[in-house]
Image (cartoon, rainbow, N blue to C red):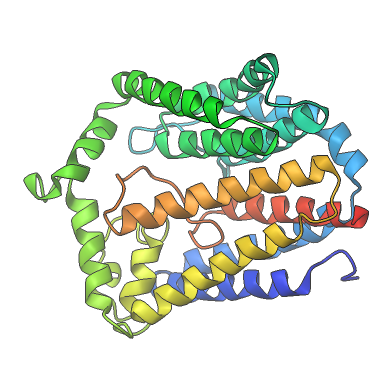
Length: 346
């Protein structure tokens, strides 16, 4: 039954899950219970998806991509705004975030596109941008700056692996800077304030700078071994906003200290390393998908932990496998299952 599963990778993932659920349990039993259910669903999907073949995923990809874009469009008709953003579709007790699904479908779509093409060809490069622009524009309109960065990170990772030249990389980075300036003008007012407050958080300590200040306090108060599970002042007394999602890293460090934070970072690093090792021997489609998945995970880890440590602006992006939220967790586990399915061709 485990012939498709990498047991070392599974052990690392379960270790991260144990840290996440321990922290969530100290804040809310209901959130922890719901997250445990999502873990079960995600692990089942991981196993099922690992049994498929590469050919099946290649046939599914175009339909999966189209459905994910349609779900992003439906968001504006079916969803209610939450804190100024339209990101979730609710089905009774179930809440789905289409942007998480769209990231996975975009990785598959780009891997399929570059399977027999090279990014050295400018025409292919432009066509690949046409693949990511529909979901990117729809995610920007939500508005959701954090997940927008993840899409571009995936695109850059796969195009570099597909032969993007160094000269082209600099051109892409310059174009990205121009795009960011343009995007800044269409951001929601609160998002602009967050970007500005990143440089001067103490200017508005009870407003735009509140998240960064409280996160730094939580991390600093954890010291070496932490205050203990359930004993963190910032997370337990709800001084730390979004303690179970965007700022769960600060929650873990406050309760388990530098040791707990370092352990989490080591586990995440080992997962990335293990995924990278699995590339060897895969067919090109599987290799490109794996690189896209690595880029997606790396961007989200760096941005999330960066904003927890006040090294990056607050963007509202989850920490993969750690933050509370079914869409992010289940999609990540599904993506890892898809990656494992490509090992059959090793």
